[in-house]
Length: 253
Length: 215
Image (cartoon, rainbow over all chains, first blue to last red; front, side, top):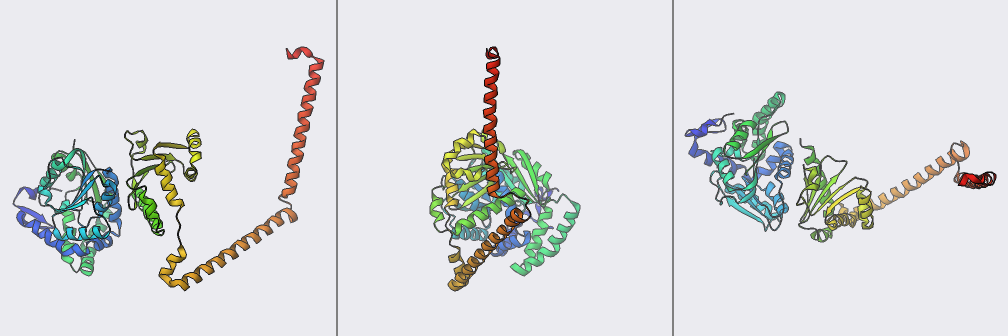
C-alpha cells in the first residue's frame, strides 16, 4: 500500500483526502470524542485480544531495569504501566501522546493504579519529538502510527531520539494474510464496529474512521521498508492473529 | 494468537490473584522488589521471566540460550524440570540437584527461594473472603457444609478402599495380604542366606581339593 499522499499537500483521513494541515486536528477530534470509552471499546472490539498483542510487544522489547522507555501515542497507558514496573526505580517511562484528552485519561488511570514515580507525561507530536538525540533505549508506538500525518517524518524523529543499540517497536493494524479472514475482518470492521461505537461510545463516525484508517495504513512490507529507509536496521515483523495486527521491530546501531 | 503470551497472562493473573487474597503477601513481596527471576522449565519451549515489584509481571523470553549470556538476563536463572520445582524449597537439596544435572543455577538463589517462600507461606482465609460477598452467616454455613461433604467423602473413600482390599485379598485371592508378603520376603531372605552359606562351603571345599587354584 502506497503512502504517496504524504508527498503532496493532501493526505488521507480514513478514505477521504484532506489537507495535510487539517489531519492532526481531525484525528484529535476523533480521540477527544472516544477517550473516555477508549479502554472499554478496545476490549469490546478486539474481544480482549489487544492485551495479548501488547504483551507480545513488551516481550519483544527486551526491557530491563534502568531502561528509558518512550511509549509514544501511549493513550491510556497500558504499555506504560507494565514498563514502569519492569524498568524499576532506576529507569524511566515517558508516556507521550499528541492528544491531551487521551493523556489525561491515561494519567488518571495510572495514578489510580499506583503507577507513579518513574512515569512522566508529555504531550508530543511524533513528527517532532521534543527530546534530545539518543535518549531512549526503547520506543513503542502501539496503534498510533496510522494516525500520524507524515509517517516518514515520525519514524525519522523516533530514530533520532533512540540510543544506538536501542529498538523501536511498532504495533499496528495491518493486512490479514488469509483471504477468508480478510473478508470476515472487512465485514466486521465496516458493519459491526461503527454500530458498536455508536452503541457504547455514542460515536459511530469515529469507529468508521478507525476501520478506514486501518485500510489506508501501509501493509507489513511497506512499513518495513519505510523503517529501513529512515535508518533502522535488522527490521523484522511478526504477524499477529493472521496479520490483522503486525509488530515491526527495528534497531538503531 | 501468540500462545506463550496467553500462557504467561494466565500465570501472571493466577499468581497475582492468589497473592491478593493474602493481605500480608505484599509485605513479603517487598523483599523481592526490583529482582528478576528467569526460569526455563524444560517441559516448556520458552523460558519465563518473573519481574517483582508491587506485583509480579511474567514475561516470555524467546532466548533459551540466555544462561550462557553475560551479563545474565536476571538476578537468578534456573533451568529445571517440573518435577524438580517442589524440591527447591529445601535448600539443602540444591547442591545434590545440581550434581545430578537436575538443576542449572546461575545468580542469586535467594531470589528463587524468596519466590518459593512467598507462595508456600500464603495464608488465605477463604471463609473471610467469602463472607465479604455473601455475609458471615452464609460463609459460615457454606464452609460447614463443605467440611461435612469433605468428611463424608473421606469416609466413603476409606470404606470403598477397605471393601476393594478385602475383596481382592480374602474373597478373590488375586492379591496377597501384607502379612503373606512380609512372610514371603522373610523366606526369600532366609533362602538368600542359605545360598550364601552354601557358596562359602563350596568355595572352601574347592580350595581344600585344589589348593593351587588360589595362586
